[in-house]
Length: 220
Image 1: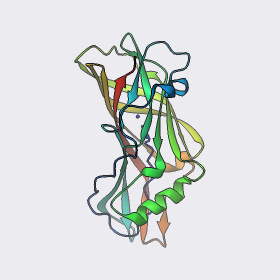
Image 2: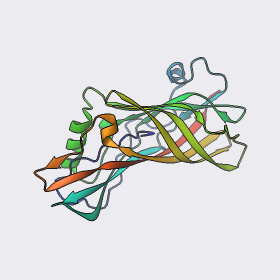
Image 3: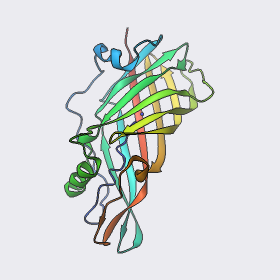
Image 4: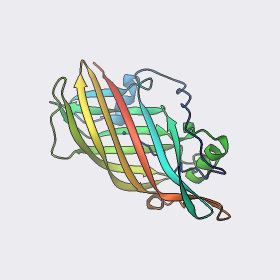
């Protein structure tokens, strides 16, 4: 789920008008995360853990760019499929869980922007965005084959800064697969990141939207 991601501030200091985003390179490892990850995801929590399938999951950011002080409907987008962790269900109700996004793998259509993203997020020291899920508002019950609206609440950590965050979207449980799509919008400065500005020529808006598609496989 900035899911991370998260990815967010990747508002990447674009050095030119953004072109339509290209598809990201797939993560180096695809498939269901190994059960060994459970101790950091669902330790002490009863229920079934649905570990992220990186072949089907994705996190992305979208942020508006400004040129010479004018917004020209240019939106920079970056994506990654390098998610890890799991979401735990007990009797169909989401339990405390953790999902991470590898920010070092974020890619847009411009390598210069991507380099700036890595710089402003300080991914050398803070390579991951982490969303610690507390639960879903109202504790909606996921039943087989039914898609339900959902609001995930929890704490997002980016660049070493923790902030409460809520993702809104839908969730569906079918055939041992949990599919959850959600998004959130927040200010980069909330996480101690100043929106990049290049000589007042190219600047990035403070507000960023993070979208996550989480597909998890049940582990026995």
